[in-house]
Length: 256
Image (tube, rainbow, N blue to C red; front, side, top):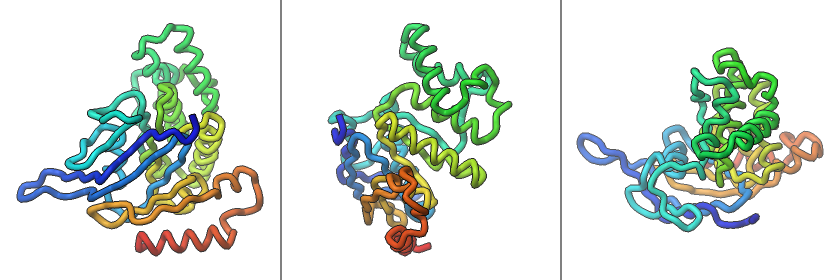
């Protein structure tokens, strides 16, 4: 159901152990994520963006505060939260297809259903023709598409993207952005994405969160619709006056 509350974070704090005293990574973060949000998180290096993603993924537990997923406390990772990292992190001994089938297979789905799911997502990312190849034969962009298909094959309630295009060349990065935008629109996914690229955030996100320097907290939120305008090809949105003004405001906030 659109606008259903999926994630609720209240006064969340994360401390990492240190020899003398704990190091605070996140301090008093409050956030609600609804169905079909596309949230992009920006902030200075070391501000805790990836820590926040790791909390949502269940890899890191809060030191203080609460984190609820569909109204329930989270104690670790599960298939309701799919993650794509900057490195594709594929199983090198498996074919492309078997990587994508891994999650549905672990769920114990029937073989025909596993094949259907894999074919669907491999088709979405335009990799069905290389389904039987090992990952080492693929380019960096193709590997990231496999990682995206593998995460989507579990049909998670939220997809977490931790700078997944950061290591790609400029043209491949644009193609991946277009692909993710299309999948988000077609499948009504909910996406939480970490990025250092303000243009990427503006062209993909519906909500942009700006974090402070460490210890990180959310200092500003913007609701934007540039992703719709890019999709409808209503001119070069990157030279739109409102786009440029917001980009400048965000850059000032993260003190670039």
